[in-house]
Structure formats: C-alpha cells, structure tokens
Length: 508
Image (cartoon, rainbow, N blue to C red; front, side, top):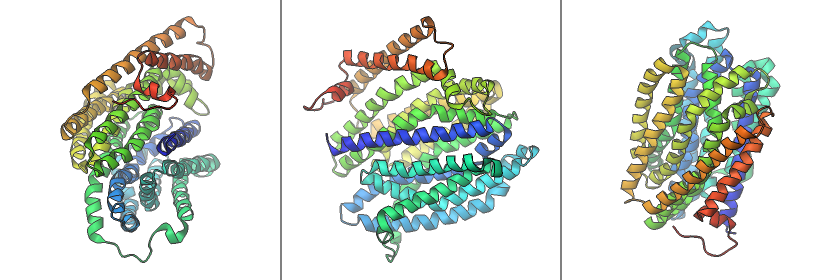
C-alpha cells in the first residue's frame, strides 16, 4: 500500500475523530443550554468572528499549499513559511484588536432584541470579544496546518484542531455553572493557544520559524493577493450562515437560532467528514499535477474526487433523510433538550440536506480554482450567492418562518455549486463526461435501492419502539451493505479498487 493511501486512511480516521468530538461539543451545548435564549445569543454572536476564523483556517491552507510548493521547488520553502507566519501574526493581531473594540457596538446594532433578555447583550458582547481575541493564535495555527498538509501530514493538522474542540468541551462541562455559556468561547480561546503550543513543541522553538529573518514584503504581498479572495470565498458559507442567523433572530421566537444551528451542525457532519476529507486529499494531488503542467492528471484528480465524494455522501444524506428524527433524538435529546426540540430541529435539518450535498461538491471544485490560482472567479460567484441568500431569506422566512431560512440555504447551495462547476469545466477544457455520468448513475441507482430497502424494513419490522441508537443501527447497517452490493453488481470503479488485492488501479 502506498504512503499516500496510508496517509489518506489515517487522515480519514483522524477527521472522523475530530467530527465526533465536534458532535460531542454540540450535544454538550444542547444538553446544558438546549434552545434557550442563552444558546440563541451565543450562536448569533459568534457568527461574525467565526467567519474570520474560517477565513483564516480554511482559506489559509488552501492558499498556502500551492504557494509553498512553488517556493519549495526552488529551495525556499522554509523561508516562505517564515514570511507568511510573521506577516499573518501581525495582521491577525490587528484584526483581533479591532474586533475586540468593535464587539460592543456591533452586537448592539445587529442584535438589538438581545437586550430584552437578562444578560443577553452581555453574553453577546463577551462571546464576540473572546472569539476575536482567539484570532491572534488562529492565524499562526492556520499557516502551520497548511504547511502540514503540504507535507502530507494530514493527521497532525486534524489532531491540532481536535485539541481545540476537546478543550472547548472540557471548559463547557467544568465551568458552565460559574461562567454560563461563556465557558464555551473561553474553552475555544484556551484550546487555540494550546494547539499553537503543541506546534511549537513539535517543531521546537528554534525550528518553529527563522526568528532573525526579515519579512519579504513583496513575497507577502504576492501571497495575500492570492489568499484574500480564497479566504473570502471560504468565508462565504459562514457569511451566509450569519445572514440566516440574522433573519432567524428577527423572527423573535426563543429557540429558533439555536435549533437552526443544531440542525445545520448535524447535517453538516457528512460534509465535514467526507467532503472536507476528500477535498483535502485531492488538493496536493492536483496541485502537484498543476505545478508539472500535467492537465490530464489534474482533471483526473478532480473527477476521482467527485466520484469518491458521491460514493460516500449520497447514501449518507439519503439515510439521514429517512432517519432524521431518530438521529436528532440520539445526538441531542438529553438534559435540557426535550422531545419537542427534537421535532423542530429535525424539520429544519431535512431542509438543510441540499446545502450539505451541493457545498460538498463545491468543496472539491474549489480546489481546482485555488490550484490554478483563480480564486477570484469563485469569489465573485460566492458574493453573488450572499446577495441571493439575503433575497431568499427575506422572501422565504417571511412566508415560511424558520423553515424558509433552512430551505434558502439549500437553494443557494444549488446555485453556488452549479455555477462553480460549470465555470471550472470551461477553464480546464472539460472533464470526462462518460466517466462522471456512468458513476453518478451507479451511485443514484444504488442509493434508491438502499432507500427502498430501508423504508421496507422500517415499515414491516417492528422497531419503532426501540431506542434511537438500535433503531438506526438495525436500519443503517443492512442499508449500507445493500448499497455496496448494488455497486458491486455495477462493477463500480471505487468498489473494485477497494476489494482488489494488488494489480493496477482501474483507469478512468
């Protein structure tokens, strides 16, 4: 087995651990604060600084990897790393200070209704302040996670992110009685610091960066000219979530913002596990092909990324649709989170399914733009999607309430994914239509067969009264087996690769 395959498997396992810990964080928040106004205020207030955090975390990695390869090829990889580390620390510190100073007026202007709740504005302001303060550490963490990805040390990058989540959980559990929901952002702040400290120890302070090296301003300017449209594009999803949160808060009902957030986080797990994992693994492959001007391997990398994504994501989301009530109950229904909260959250989650599917495809497609250093294309499309989201939220939330907000997210994702895919298609001179259509048909046929089997079992096997975990297990395991059996009947490329014992990989 090749080193890349081993690294990919380890990375997938590491990512699943990260997302499992992220799920625990969400269910801890749900158990402690459920859909109370405190949870509403927290989720609303953290969206603005969190957009900047994602701008750095994901955008930095996507911009840094091809940039690092470029300088590593001429023997200046470490020098480039130092330039970007130092400049990013300075920039993020400035933005952190500005965010801290503006948190109070921003929260009061954007969410004036929070003042109607006891300590509502206080929670919002301090949540924003603490997350903005975290930017000081987040920026340097993001550069190093991009560096580790470039070295194909995917699992270490994921491990450092997992530390942040685990510390956040620990603080929520230990200090929620003393600090309330502010224990969550405090945990995140400490977690980002410890994550950075681990990287310093791992590299040793001496090798962490060249402390005496002067910043090459021309090099930094060139990098940030590429980075900011990439980062802004990555932040589009969070900006759209911020728009959804704003319109949710305008509806004026306690619990809407938090239930929408719980629904989104749950449905987003398959995207985070499969979409992000596959996109991250594909990225260095297509970046290397691009650096060698090998457009055949570049296109094959995109095609295989989309195929492998569809293989895992399609049945996962279809199964979630069928078992959504049981999933929400299993994940969230404990402590302060009641059965009525489960029903509401499940109804929102089903409407979010489209956003997860199409944004996952877009995550693969986006890597093609970033590798070609044409992030400005996708940035323009992303900004248009934000405007579309505002219009749809205004229209659909007024007509359907909170359900309209979740539906808007899915409709915007369809637009975003279709436009970016067709644009990349033109830029690279087309992809292998036969390959994509054949494999897409196989996945759809296998998924439809699985769903009919699951619905049949759910109807005729007396499992309705079983606990959610057993209900899901009895339905999901046979469903997954049936799905892969159908793919085997089609002699699907992915399944053939998995079950083969050596030999050449099937070609596209």
